[in-house]
Amino acid sequence: MIEIERKFLVLNNDFIALAVAKNRIVQGYLNSNPERTVRIRTKGSKGFLTIKGKGNDSGTTRLEWETEIPLAEAEKLLSICENGVIDKIRYEIPSGKHTYEVDVFAGENNGLIIAEIELNDENESFVKPNWLGQEVTGDIRYYNGYLSNNNFGSW
Image: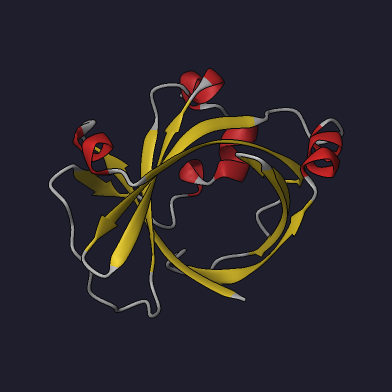
């Protein structure tokens, strides 16, 4: 139930040719408070309910609980979420023994591309591809909960 994750901006679209999977994700928040976010997500033909706790001081580690729910239920729950639904395409790119998830945002967050990598330990080493840019781990502006209320297009 612990998520250890680092986030990076992406410099270019070179990652697309390396992708092994691609899915559209639509997500909304029943609660976008960074202390305890409650998220509803559709990913392809699946639905998910996720609860995340506040991150540690570095923003790398936090509690995360997720369960799959029927797609129809996720779609109904999206209709009662806070304003500011996130719409993005997620690409999965293998890199060494890890997989980067690269989100290309649409709608009000169009133009933003973020790569995330999940680790087993905060100090675990990992390959940094040449398309990876500045690290933004711990910068709340790049959390989806924040982006749902403060779209990238208005920065």
